[in-house]
Image 1 (cartoon, rainbow, N blue to C red):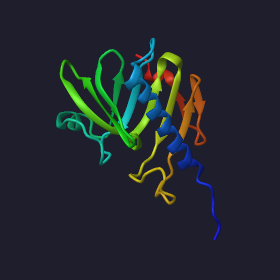
Image 2: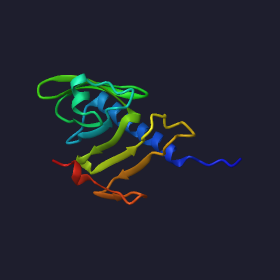
Image 3: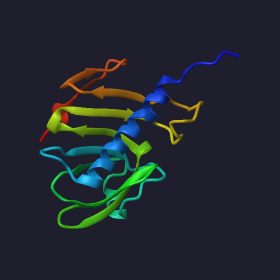
Image 4: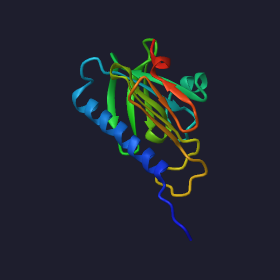
Length: 156
């Protein structure tokens, strides 16, 4: 029986660890300078916790911004919780790292795109579908399947 190194899942695990490390630093020291994050996640992921009205409004995915107003950032081993303001309505969210689709810091033109279409953990050696991962340190990065990810799409 042949064995292969599962680079895609290894990269997915590494990218989730990077996001966790960044959020741990922000939880401890706050957002430095003009740094801020656009985090898009799968609202249908079984471990995501959002208010019912948000889940109904965003049944597939949601993008949140961590910039001027966020509170109670608590970073755990599998995900993070944060309170964000939605039209003067604070809501507590729990976002597992495996639910994150994109993590972008436009202040330094950095972004990650993680697509994991199944609910398996990244360490699972036999996932039903493989995650696509693109590191976006420049304005545009080309993925192996020909998709182009541009940070311009995340700018206001």
